[in-house]
Length: 118
Length: 119
Image (cartoon, rainbow over all chains, first blue to last red; front, side, top):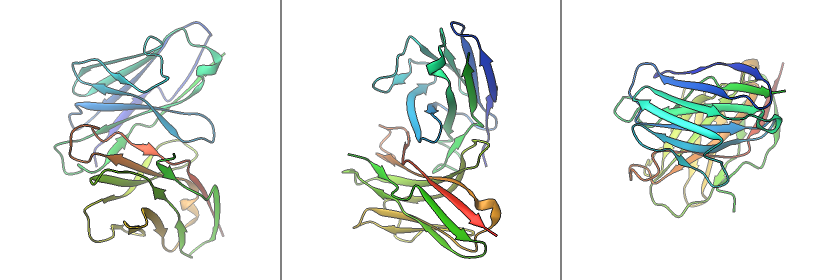
């Protein structure tokens, strides 16, 4: 199946700094990628939909100025957590759909990034 | 109202036995997709099985089958011959507006069921 690679898998940063997370589709073109956040022992909550070449669409309650999303190419979307605070500590995971491939009914997920802000 | 409801926070099953994980959904769309994912402690989301709203037959993938009852709006996952490696969180998810292009397959997840397989 298609592969989505997410980097880094773990990051610890100081409060007030920014952290960039990358999500790459390795063997297919993803015009749309999705960013989710998962707090411990909770479900995945969609943060935003990332569209190649255009602005991301944010879900209600998600601060677009804090969670910057850039989808500059068909294989790469980035999420930057700006001025991170301890309450931003969470598991961030991206997904992508291979719209034109064999696995059109499947959403592929990256490995996730565990962010800890100290 | 919850779009995806998983009423079992935790389930236990003996190795080699079958187990059913419940999932009910709520949508007014005619076209939608239902997914099951497995999330081990490492955090990755592993796709298990998919059922489209227009699919007449229940989906099957190896030891996984989806018991799709459209009128009841339920999409239960059945795992046959459980293995110790099946112990994980299991999430049911739905995408609405399938093929409409509007939602672009964004998924709404249930709260999950933690499955523990006992030896």
